Structure formats: structure tokens, C-alpha cells
Length: 319
Image (cartoon, rainbow, N blue to C red; front, side, top):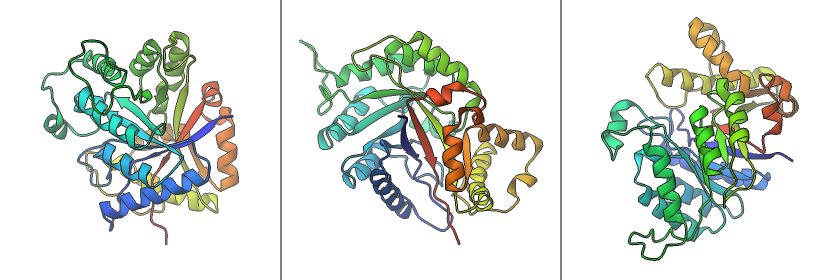
């Protein structure tokens, strides 16, 4: 049976505050736990007025402390922004506070604009090889210390916090396969490479101490309402947010706008159509049917075979 999980950006809606957004996230996590969702992940982004999850580990602690059984984690930590030792200590602390409930998803994108990225970076001249090396270093800190090891993550060592590789390209798929780690593909915003990436991951997967068989999580956007028309209207909030980010003018999550897509450029309309390959919009019955039918997700069998599906959640004001 396919598992379902939640990816939350802690969205800040127009007219609201980060305080309200973080409380809404906790409320949603508590509902997700009651509804039987497997995990609740928080994403790292910086310098975006509409996203309150920049201090990702802190938000994870907030969510984990207000729930009791659902797994809580990062979807993900943008590892190039952090020293592996710091991440090991942060997530080792979380794992010590909430045993067997913490996940650590890792991405190699900065999660922000170039200026903010430069302000965050610990290395002014990174190269593509840094990310795999940092992942391996982080794994090292989370395992039991070796004899003679001088630098030990405390807390962290011996916690073996489950690591995931996040990606939207073949690079992440290949790295996850090589290290024998579960792979979360960002099909909710980059569906084009989904088939090829998942096929490569399954083909190249090498068993590890953490994972013996491939494990795939795919992301998708869901907007359900009493009617299809209402769901389509509500979805325009997330579409506005996505398009504004691509335009370089990110802001708080705006209220829905009727006919929004009609005012977009041809290129932006094409971008929205591409996003819709991994989206379910409609009444609850229709959304469930869409989620169950692989042929409606770009004709891919990988969707049906995914071990887990993650729903991107953006809370929008209604009424």
C-alpha cells in the first residue's frame, strides 16, 4: 500500500504573520497525524516573505513537540548552506528528543536567490563534488564513533538519523542509488525528468546498511474543495506564488484570483501546464481517483510504483 506524507513550506499568507503560519503548520501536522499520514516534512528556503521555514531544524522541533507518532523531518536541508557537523548536531539533538521520529532529507540547491546564497555560504567557491562529499561526511557523524575519531557530533553520533537524497534531476537519482539511500523526487515542481530519474535510481541502486531495496517518494500538488471550480480557484494562490518566484518578485501567499491563468504569458502558461502533470485539483472523490490512476500523471508507471507520495501543502485564505 502506498504511503502518503506532507511537505510544508509554512506559507505566510497576505495579511498574516510568521507566527500565525507556524501555528497553522502545527495544526496541520496534528491533523495529518490523525489522518494517518506517514511523515510531515519541512522545506528550507531563505529570504522569501511567504515562507516561514528558513530555520528548518527549529520548525521541525516545533512540529515534533506538538505531535506524538508521525515522522517529522526536513524536505529538505540544503546541505551546501551548512557544515555537515552542524547538521549532525541539530538532527542528532532532534533524534534524542524525539527518538525514531526524525528524517533528514538533503538537497544541493541553495533554496534562495544568489545574493542570499552568498550571505549563507560557508564556502565561497563550491564545486559540484562538495555535495556528495558532504553527504558522506554527515553520514559519518551520525554513525557510532570510530576508534580514535577526534571530532564527534554530540548529540548526533550513533543516532543513525535516516538520510534521504532530494532531487529534481539525474544527479540526485544517481547519488541516492550509489549511496543506497531513499530518493525523493521533486515532481511537484519539476516533473519533466521524473521518469528518467526514477528509472536510473532503480537501475543503479546499491543496497546499504540503511536501505536494502530502492525507495521512492514523489511529490505532487493537491487542491481539493467541494467542487472542481472552487478547487481550481483556490489553486491560483499557489500558482501566483510559483509564477512570482520565477519572475523574481516573491511575496506572501496571495488570495485566489479568478481567471488568473488567462493573464499569463504563453511561456508562463506552458510552465503551469507542466506543473499540472503532477497535480490533482477537484472535489475529494476526483482527487482520490487522480491519485490512483498512473495514466493521468504524464503516462508514467513510476507514479503507480512509488513507495510513497508527498503532498505539497499551501494553506490559502477562504472567504
